[in-house]
Length: 405
Image: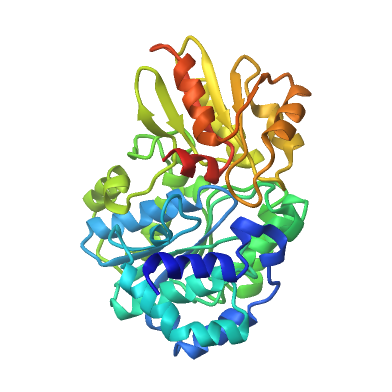
């Protein structure tokens, strides 16, 4: 198979949560454990950092990878979902996994995948571990896909476990209270392995402390031990200050394993995009009119990003907005600005919510706009109306941003 045929097979023949939702969710680790054994446990042959959380996982993972790269290490980075090409999920020092490795890995293990009915995500996690082992990375930063306890990445024993924050997302799988969700995320805490908590609430802190005590794991609350004031990153957005704090705490813990100078830390934080090619985090696509794209897609993330939007100067605000059909609109629509003009559309995935349904629900919250046939058309209409002093914000879903990028 060619690379495109291979990726198409992965997407279409096996269930994938980001496209199909609940039918792709498997509530145990038996499949990934079978795959790891089949591959001779590559995850046990590499050093790792494990990153979970409702929001900020991708930014935090990329910041950590960037700092380690600046320190001269060969760094694997596994993140999800991708925006344009599957290979974005698996990188070494910012370079995507080769098409050849993807094709060869699937071809070599296709019979096993089909026999064991492995999911898209399980195959991808196994591919990442195998690639990082074969390429002999010094360390791999591994981002959790969803939750933590039952996530396919949760077969590693990392140097440090990280939980960025807790918000309500994927409630059908993780629970509908912050404490329940925190319990799922805390499932990545391993015996005697340090855990860093980026943000916490009165509801989640006791959950983390109890799990860390059970695992006899040292626990660090980054917001209590590290300041972000004066520290900057090329990842823009006020919310990145919290991620910087978390990253600084992790770096302090891994200095016993790696030689990392203060200069490496500063340079790593300020060269994240160049080092890791991360996209979609308060990304300015153009000026005059200013166009900003951000992948925030849940209550916690959108509330923070909308506060950031209030700091921008503009004459008129336009929002190109779309969501997936399992999104809790009651929780996110109240955060959207009423003075904006909206262009609603359905992302071109199976789970995309029809633009007409989104627009009708948005009206209940005083949000007015037009429904477009596609995300690109919505963007084109917004650009046609926007003057040089206006601002266009693109978001609501990772898939919306992907279609524009």
